[in-house]
Image (cartoon, rainbow, N blue to C red; front, side, top):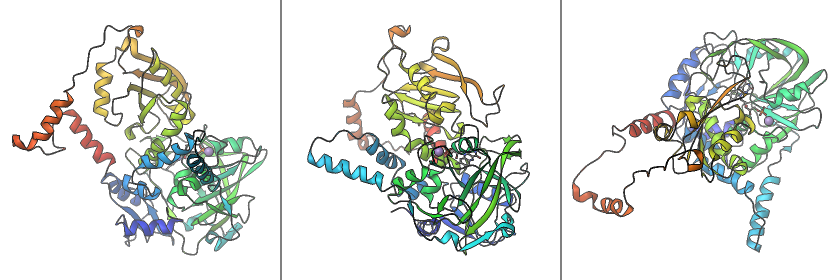
Length: 501
Ligand SMILES: Cc1cc2nc3c(=O)[nH]c(=O)nc-3n(C[C@H](O)[C@H](O)[C@H](O)COP(=O)(O)O)c2cc1C
Ligand SMILES: [Mn+2]
């Protein structure tokens, strides 16, 4: 079973040789960033800084920084196995036989068992500081990059309720520390927490959980439709419900097993200038008005551990949170667009800049249909550039994709320019939030699409391939895998360095 809290997770990482404890005093002001930046880029371990300068709590970082750790977090061999679990529920068919009925009921039960559970007591309230005793300066909050004006809480799970229907939302929105008891709340224009706030008259209660089991922490970053509670996704993926206790100063429930919880409120009309912040786009996002979060209570475990993450020029630790979402949400994307075989959001495209998608093309204009559907689908709607390829193309092999984007494209015919919503942080468009979209149809073209007879791709026959496989030893040729000089080999090697360490 996946870890129940941050401690079990740290113990698991340690058992697996995936964590290094740093006893030396290290400054959360910039120094941690430089250490973790080098560690992430080298595919290195999670780091537990036991003596962050100026704070009592240890700081955990890079817990998600490799594919292996991401899989450990989910208790899966591969991220696609996690997706398989989601697909199993989404693709449920009416059962035909008794065995299928029983299986169906088990699946339904796994959903029912995912609902968060209220408990009376939780370790997160071992220490309760209220009012004047609250001091965010106690925590080793990082100032990440030299142009950041203040420390930022970077790995929070921000809990709100929609005042209209009471549904819960959990989102990961960074929080710039203003003083001992206030921060900004950086929920962007497309986000659910912001929608809850905008629907409120006066003030909205807010709770922020820090230091969660890895699946629940991941779930706060998952792009679920607004009415779906991220804690339910966490419970489903963990196979055990998230336990909640009543907050001490707010009418909200908070994760009982968190390390730290900040409770408080945000006023509808109190804004301040948040930022600039060295962001996951690789640039500083300019200062902009965001609401102010007033902390009414800081509750924590007696020996709480503070979790953090650094974003910046890719690849950073958050690449793996994004890759987990890419894999886990593929079944949901396919539920709407069954013609999709696979998709890839390149880390270097910081997730909203580029989407490569392969389809089983069935009719003229099909690639264009898929582009427009993606530009209308949840957070994928913010995608700036979409490349559509045929079913047999490996979307994760960027050299292969470039080959088809070159070979199969007549720019005059196969490039779509459209307009639509863009990511809040995108600095390139003339105006914030809205601008151009680029679609590239790199599929083989049909006569109805204005193509001459399409040539056949070169492939060796299976018989000859089998024969050479069987006889390889006879030839006495030794090839070292991964050392070739074709562009595809170079690509997969750099990809492996980037992603697979
Ligand atoms: C490390 C990290 C930091 C993030 N910071 C922000 C942020 O400051 N503001 C924001 O709106 N989204 C941020 N996101 C993205 C949101 O967490 C993501 O869009 C999530 O789906 C939001 O939840 P919601 O859909 O319930 O609004 C961040 C994601 C990660 C992984
Ligand atoms: Mn949400």
